[in-house]
Every structure is written in C-alpha cells, then in structure tokens.
Length: 241
Image 1 (cartoon, rainbow, N blue to C red):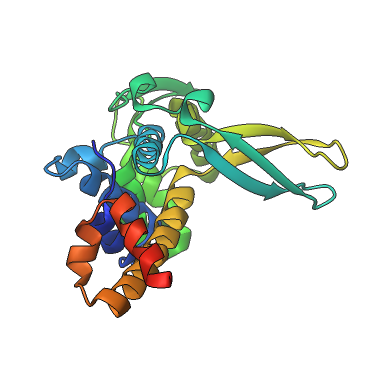
Image 2: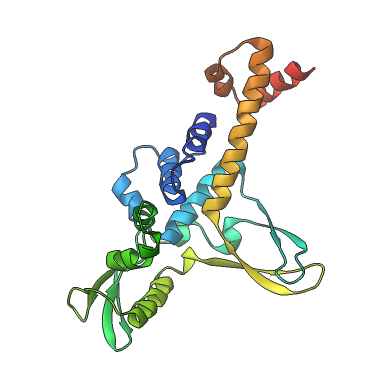
C-alpha cells in the first residue's frame, strides 16, 4: 500500500458519477496497484474502512480533524482522533471474515458478513428499496443446512441484526460530549465519506495550484504535478510574488 499521489487524486476526483462503494474500491486499487479485484470485493466493510483509513494516513497524515453538531443544542463540536485510537487498522482485522452459523429465531443460519463487493452490487439497482433483500440473498448461505429461499420479514430483520454482529468494525461509534450543553452523544465514523471529501478538496487545491504556476511559467500540468510538494509550493509562492 502506498500514499496517493497528485495524479491518483485527480483521477479519483473525476469519478464523481460513480457510487461511493465503487469509489472505495477504486481508491484501494490506486493505493495498491495490481491487487486482485476479486479479493478487494471480498473485503468485509470493517476491513475495507480500515484500509481506507490506512490510505488516508499515508496520504494526509494520521490525525483526523472532525466536526459535527450536538443533537440537543446544535452547537458545533470539533474533535480529533487517529485510526489507532479507534482500533480501525488493517493489522487488527482479518482480511476476510469466514462464514459463521448462528441461531436465529429457532433456526441455524449460516451467514457471511456484507462485503465491499455487495455494496457495489446494490448501488446499481433499479429499485433501491430492494437493497436489503439483495444483501440478504448474498450473505445468507443456508438456513438449517438448506438453501435459504425467500425470508419472512420478521426473520429477515433478525438475520440483519446478526449480520451487524459479524462485522462490528463496520459501524464505529465515537462517544462525544457537547462543550456547550454537556450532552453526551455518539456519532458514526464514516471513513469512506471522509476520504472522498478530502480527496475532492485536495484535487481542487492541486488544480488551482497548477493553474497559477502554469499561468506564470507556462509549464504543463504533468510537469507541475510531477514536482515534489515542496518544490511545487516554492513555485506557487514565486508565481504569487
């Protein structure tokens, strides 16, 4: 795995029409060229998010500076953390979580966690309301040792709860306290949305820097992006002087 360079960042920022789940796999593929696409798609969501945070750490540094609003008084709440602090690192999570047979509503159900590829598959559904049913069809491998068939609604709800327990790293909650009203609350950490947002901001900054430097020195975008950040910053300051 490597940090994303300027060309990677610009390429990824131009895939705006692609769904977030597809962008996640595109980011990981750029960070580790040659990695098997099938294995990427088989990653659990927790492992996928851990790898995304690892890419983010290599590219932008370990510190995550985050912001939310207090659900009680709507005051802004700023907080910082690292992937290590929340335990969301590739070293702490299995590459692929094996299927598990668990009791659900009087039945023995064999499940595998929702994978990164599953989320890509439901992004293109013509009927988004069918997403839950499609995920269950992918993840429920057997009921009482037999093919599952269609699941009753109440039973499907119970199975979905078990799926969440198979991959607890897929939903990381951060406990916070509002500095204004002192309310305690929790927010979900969403590594994918965070990284996509940062990549888009960095892409805009890079293009702005290229435009300023090219306007003065008449160099190509490729040549400017090939510079080290330190050298690019020097020429940017020179162009502004």
